[in-house]
Image (cartoon, rainbow, N blue to C red):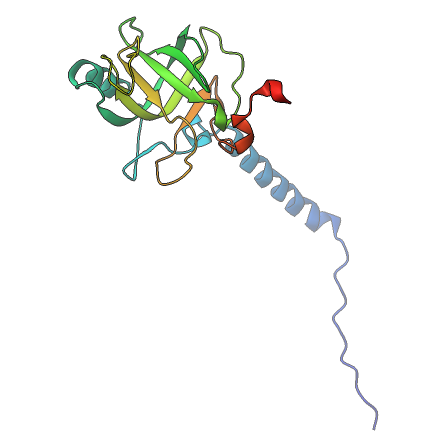
Length: 194
């Protein structure tokens, strides 16, 4: 008895009339997907700014109210957007600068950024700033902070989280900062030692 070997169906040869339209359709779909990805809004480009598990929108009006009505050292989560209006002296491991929001010279806030979470570009007046982090009313000296903010309030922790604290970020002219690795033991050694 002769063993029968099953016959496989012949593979379909390339049919230019049938395959080209399908390939064009795939390419068109891929192009639209790329176009959609690159036209995403700024809110989609940054990590969400969270407060107690809820996503924050821009809180400029809330921050202005907190500055006017809360006691010294009041703490709240904020997401502010404004324009860099003044540079302050860098203190130890943190950059300090002022942003003006909502167009008023009274509507200012000090941003405090920890260099342990990445370098910043050379800062200049006029740069667009978005910061997500902890707002603190700082209008009087305290034992821990003997110098209050010249703006009456600060936003800090504008970087990724290193534990249970909610993460923040800093965006300068649309570029995200504050997502670096955080401190290492080598950051405690002065640069001159190397």
